[in-house]
Image 1 (cartoon, one colour):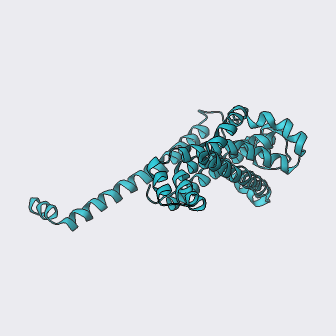
Image 2 (image 1 turned 30 degrees about the vertical axis):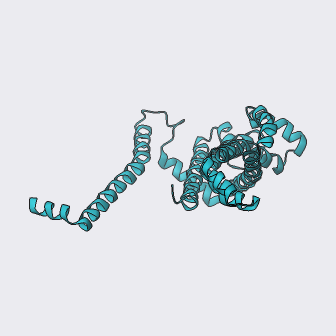
Image 3 (image 1 turned 45 degrees about the vertical axis):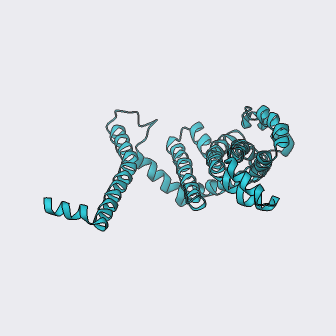
Length: 273
């Protein structure tokens, strides 16, 4: 055994292979822990609800919720609400992110624009978007546009602030090198400003997608006749708590899914990180 260990230490290839296997084992352990925690919580919930240790009227067992999920899916009602909410989220998210990135890059690159626009953004940002919903409804009516604008408004601020921070935090040496080599405005934008701001910008976009989910649920609760938020609110009012939990699970699932997709995009766009 000692002789085998000495051979591995003396062979760089063997050492590298052993280190790779060790990393793989650690990775599998982390994956197992990640999956086991929600399963463990669901099992506790199921047992406590079945045994009467928690009130099954308010906390129905997960198996019953899963059956309700299946019924709503079979009837098509669940997918109807999901489709409408996803359309609103996607439209509002793009409507908020695209101008936020453009304005954030503009503010980060040009100091006069940053000093001119920063007070306006900082003054409006603390106001909850839902508090502005009456004004949004007055301007855009009670249809789909008002809900999309509400989501866009909630997504806009974290993205624009993070984009500005990403540009202004670019190392000065890169800016000097670009100027010394005579980089034009187009080259400076695509080769320096945009790649340099991407790490912080993507964190703002990640935050924006979480806020979009929160906003759509609240907006659909307040003034809608469809969507996941509407399903949660009407189920609560009718004391159909299994249906309410189905809506909560769907929101949780999409929040996790969007987060994973954005993290995957971040890995593709920022391989050096």
